[in-house]
Image (cartoon, rainbow, N blue to C red; front, side, top):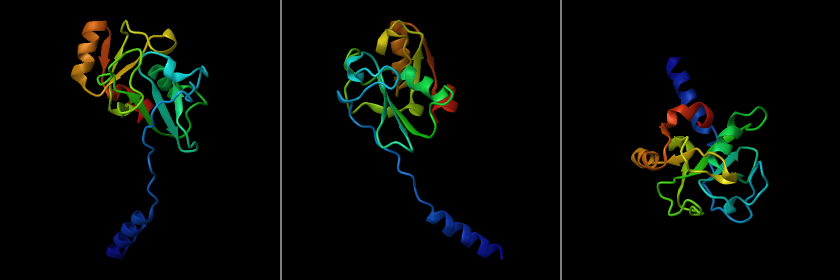
Length: 157
């Protein structure tokens, strides 16, 4: 009986539909900030794109800070699949980070908070880096503290 139960569980697990996580898409002039309705690409600093299960397109944010706020505000994020953020360790410019190629999952980043750098809309920014050493180097140059990803896990996992 136990053997039969194990076989049933094995086959049922194999029949479950695998959810496809969307890949990040390049930032274009068509992307408007979720909160500000402004053109995202026109703002300095790191950006974010959020995918929810009930939306085919990314929800864009002019700053990573705003995307994280979206995750915790009541009534906002409902069924988030994945959040992508700019890896600022790969960015060649603060004012105009590349539009593609440097997106990483938000839960894989180290974040610099409370630095002197300002992001989209001129606000304080939460600055993501894939590499902790690069985040620490940035914080030495521009101030702030490095927060490891686990601090944000309840928000972005």
